[in-house]
Image (cartoon, rainbow, N blue to C red):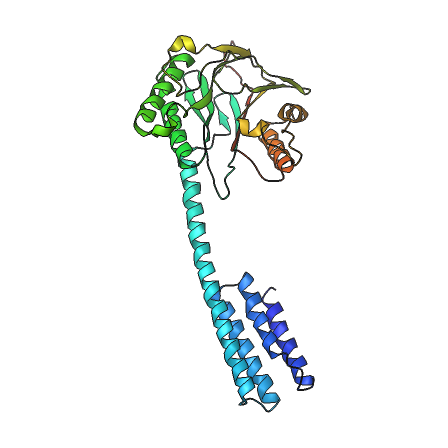
Length: 358
């Protein structure tokens, strides 16, 4: 359908030029046809349109009996040169488009390798996750999340690396790798936090720039959800507390004991207290990074996550994040100032088997 427009334009210009007086020259307008074609077609189709335009120009000259005049020959040559230039620019654009598509595919693959999508169900939990990168054409930034299935429980982590760009991605990769390994090796969340701190300290000792000494750190929230206990255990390493959504729109912000972010300095298990929060089968926990609550609209107002989440407290995790994503994009006009990561988790109904008498 799009190709029909330049073809009709060539025919229309040719017909009008042949029926109007000789002092009205419309042939040079034929260059519009290949120019339009280049917007939505490739170089070969654009070249075909250019050839058709040159042929139409020659037909106009033949029809007027001036085909071999100097003016008509110059017009034909100029149209051919301009069409060739348009074809060359179209070919360059297509090449860059293919390169960009390849880079995007590599970025998407890197994201899936680094930031694994969480399964819809893990143990007794129903999960949903969302990641929005602030950088244009980016798939991942400095926010991170991960989950691990341990014996009788599920452990999760959500965090935010200070800074943006490739250094933040590198530190995020380090923290994710350390969590996936350490989550299975330590009995408690404080010991897990200490293990992550040691991994980050080793990384910063080797790769932290001298001019940023002491300024690189990671905020993280570590969680453990037992399979058959109506509680969640949490250890906050300088991260924001989650939202606990109850049926009917009730929203609670659990009070968490503060602890320093990862990478600030040596710590031990006593520096990472564990907070136990009730978590029933009808509750939903919403984890997020500061890119959500610091998102602004045109007037500079922050995104009211607590108020908005209360509207969808009864929604399933996938639906909840869908609503938040759409509402957040509307609030910011599609321009995020920072990366955004969210996790929604809901305890799925389970049936514990027992002995049957008969």
